[in-house]
Image 1 (cartoon, rainbow, N blue to C red):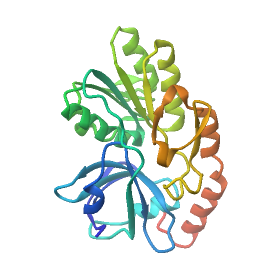
Image 2: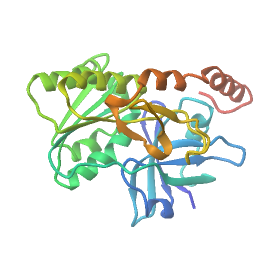
Image 3: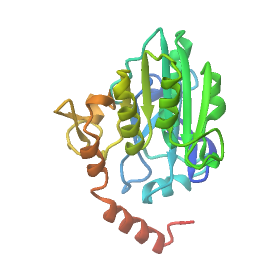
Length: 279
């Protein structure tokens, strides 16, 4: 159980694992996530379900090596096992079954966008996609997204490929050109999602986001993942992770995500100093 059956490097510091987890794969739906623990004394971290195959009993997870736990996770190889995979957690995405939808993935946010785009494409929705990153080397899952999209646009901050600028700039360009979208789904870093919803707000286009706040138990008991949506407190793990982006208090959410940066840095430095395999 929980054996890594495939490992793939998508970009520098970004890994894809296909893991044997038949009980979770049998119930998984687009928009959901799992809580993963590597070892008995390890940290519990939320990871988006980037794909699933109920027949094969596998989950696909994509993560970026940023802190101690994700760097340790990245050191595992095919054949290694994860101690725990809890899920599927969160509310499945309520996806349209008709119309024209713009899917926007920034950085690792392309991974949670993919199963949503795949499901909508399968149901006959016209999916237009934007995948964005800082540079062309960090673009991930391009072929997968192209296969489920009627049109695919690429944006890079440095202009090394595609549209030169941020994802929200490309969204504005498409809207100004007169393209119609019944809904927009944007997933990525908090700042990127905030920029996207502020861009779409004047156009009145319904814009969904998938929030990724600090999370501990994934069941709503710890309260760590609380966010303010429509001036009400919500818990991303049990009320989300998808929310109406125009109702999210992003300034508060961004502040909360930065609360433990010093502790995270200290933990990583200590792990590296004791032979954690930093590179």
